[in-house]
Amino acid sequence: MIHQYIQNGYHVVLDVNSGSIHTVDPLAYDVIGLFEVAPKEEIIDAMLTKYAADPSITRDEVLEVLKDVQALSDAGQLFSDPVLAQHDAPSTEKNTEETATTQVVKALCLHVAHTCNLNCEYCFASQGKFHGERALMSFEVGKQAIDFLIANSGSRHNLEVDFFGGEPLMNWDVVKRIVAYSREEEQKHNKNFRFTLTTNGILIDEEVMDFCNREIHNVVLSLDGRKEIHDQLRRTFGDQGSYDTIVPKFQKFVDSREGKGYYIRGTFTHNNVDFTEDLFHMADLGFKELSMEPVVCPAGEPYALTQDDMPELYRQYELLAKEMLKREKEGNPFTFYHYTLDLTEGPCIYKRITGCGSGTEYLAVTPWGELFPCHQFVGDAAYSMGDVWAGVNRPDLQQNFRSCNVFSRQECRDCWAQLYCSGGCAANSYHAGGDIAAVYEYGCDLFRKRMECAIMMNIARQEEA
Image 1 (cartoon, helix red, strand yellow):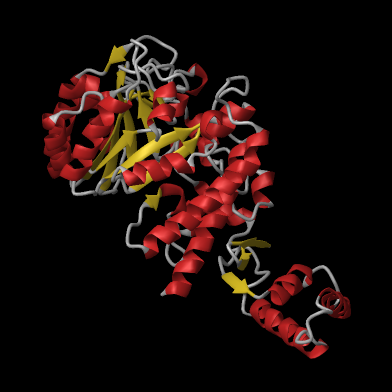
Image 2 (cartoon, rainbow, N blue to C red):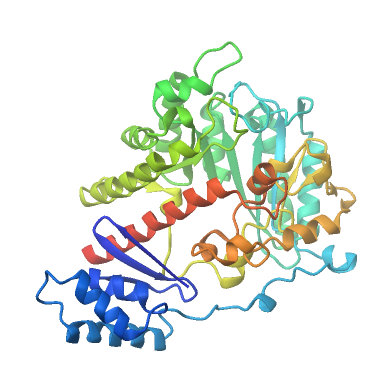
């Protein structure tokens, strides 16, 4: 399988199964497009007709290109066979309960606060309550969650814990106590904890910054961009915008971390399909580690993205890639999460197939210790998986999540981006299509466009080197 596209003056050919990426001239680009679907003489005639106005394109020139394409095919760099056959992929068969319950857990998302001090209109967590009652996690529940993680982590040394909400700073003392307890236990069990905190920033102060700079490996700061965009949907319960409160705090916080171990995470909606303006605004504020996610919400919401928005979103992603390259040349770069792509190393093939590990390696914990596949399933009784005392009691759910891979979805098997997205987000699939094995087509379209841009940027950088 190959994928071809033209962007920013580059004619790009991606060999899906080998991962080989080629930049070619227009003639080779067209020959490759016909190589497997037309006989040699037909390709030659088609090229001589298309390039009749170019005297340099002769029969011998086309034959030379055909020879080069054949050589790349023979070398496994074009039209290559799949790295894994379907039967080599992670099993989609039903596992026994005994096998499923031995699943190693490497990460927990601790919902330390099912409450929030903002009233964001698009919040998937229903203003932090997750469609339930407001609640704060006790230290006893948090302590047991850490014990559960250690007990179920097998031989893994590095473990990850995310402090999430709602707004986790509304339960700050418990966050600190959980971190202290984890540090005590990691020495006893040969573990290393890496902590992440996601915050809207309202409660950030000197004490929070000092503690995070000592103990929290990564801090996610929520900002949607320009003041008028951010304040439109991210408002207080008193109906005030939050931009003026949080931006100075974020700037001070990032500066205190020496620009490392953070990223700004925004959401774009139908209200700002020109989301690159928000990214450029945040970069100009001094924030260099950026992420901007498309909103996922019911189609009837006024801020929901529409199919009519798609052409402009494509244009915005291409504009973003070009501007990032321009700023890099000027010595003023910034990072966009979705364009971070390592074409030489990257994840192993099994990780590329199976994805994020939600419901298997990664679980979410509610304030009362209930387990869910990830934060986006919290509150849905059909996806309750047990608790941190008794452990996982739904091996069938674990197996369902384990079976979600690029081979379990027909749409993924035929998609050129399959080894970049690993089948996509199970939660988005569930909320869009009612099944974790479904496909969220809108998200897929945007992901493919982002990958085209990321690959183009890698090509441009290599040519500049």
